Length: 65
Image (cartoon, rainbow, N blue to C red; front, top):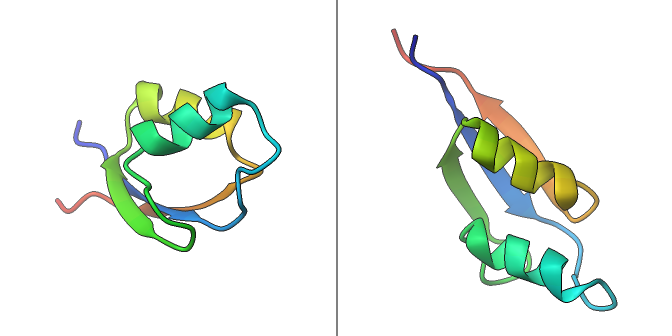
């Protein structure tokens, strides 16, 4: 079974949030506010997104057959 991808956009500043939230944003590959990256749809990434869901916007990209 092939999984799709996730398009992640950083939409809210992490100023005022914990260092762990900031580190999670960086670990997702986001460097600048407004930046968009694509990551594999795997449980590890989903867990990271769960922790910072108030700072990012996530769009699912279906897997190609």
